[in-house]
Image (cartoon, rainbow, N blue to C red):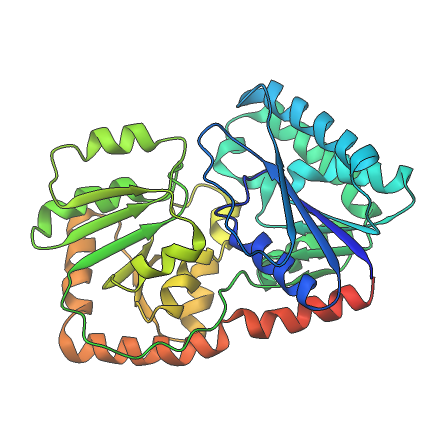
Length: 359
C-alpha cells in the first residue's frame, strides 16, 4: 500500500478539494495522511474521515515571518516525522518544502495548483513579494513530472508556460440527488473567502433594493471586519462565519440564488472556476456570476444562471428579480439538475485515480 502525504497551508476544515482528493485516494487503496495548519480559531477536525489528518501551529500568524516559519516547519515534518512514497503539494506555498523533502528522501512528488497563484490580487500590488513567488515557480515547476490544476483554462496556461503537462481536475462536489422544489425563501447566498475582489461589497449595496430578501455571507477572511462595518445598518444581511463542509450544504439548499461576483483584479480571477459555483449547482440553486472567462465557461456548458453585465447594486437587484420570475426560475432549476450530474466529483475522481496510477 503506497503512502501519500498531502500538504496544504489551510486548516483542513473548510478545504473541500483536499478532503475530496484524500478521500478518493484512501478509498482506492492508498494510505493517506493530510498535513495542514492549525490556527487559533480553527474548528475541530470532523470525525470519521477516511484518512489521517494532522495539523501544526505556527507562532507567527501572518506576513513574511509566517510564511518562512511555515515552510521550515513543514520541511522538517516531512523529512523526519512523516513517511511517504508520494508527497502531494497543494499550491505554491507548500511546494518548496515538499520538493526538497521529496528529493532528500528520493520519493515522488505531485503538485496541485488550486489557482493562478502569482496572479492573485494579494500579490498583484506587492511586486517584491510577487517576484519571489514567480521565481520560485519558474525554478520548481519545470522540474515536476506530475501536476494538477482546477480547470482546463489554467491547465493550458501552465502547460504552455512551463512545458509540462497539467491535468485538469475540477473542484466539484460529490453528487447528491436533489429534487427540484419551489423556493419560498428569498435568500441570496455567498460562501467562500471574505477577501479583496470577491464582489461582496456590491452584494451588500444591492440589499437596499431588495428589502424582502436576505443575504447570507458564509466564511471568513482579510476584509471581514470592514464588510461587517459596511453592513451594520442592514437588517437583511447575515454573517454566518465559517461552516464545516459537511454542514454547509444544509445552508446552500435553503438559498434561492447563489452569488459569485469576483472582480476583474487580475488573471487569477479571470480564469477561476470557483468551487462555490459548483456547490450551488449541486444544491439546485441557480447562480449569478461575473462576466469573466472562467465563470462564463461554466454557463456556456449549462445555462444554470445569468451573467451580471453591469456591476451596480441596481443592476444586481434587477437581475435577482428577473431570474426569480416563476417560469424562468424553474427552467434554471432544471438546468442545474442536469448540470449537477456532469459537475460532480464522481466524474473527476476517475481522472484522479488514473493520474495516480501513472505516478
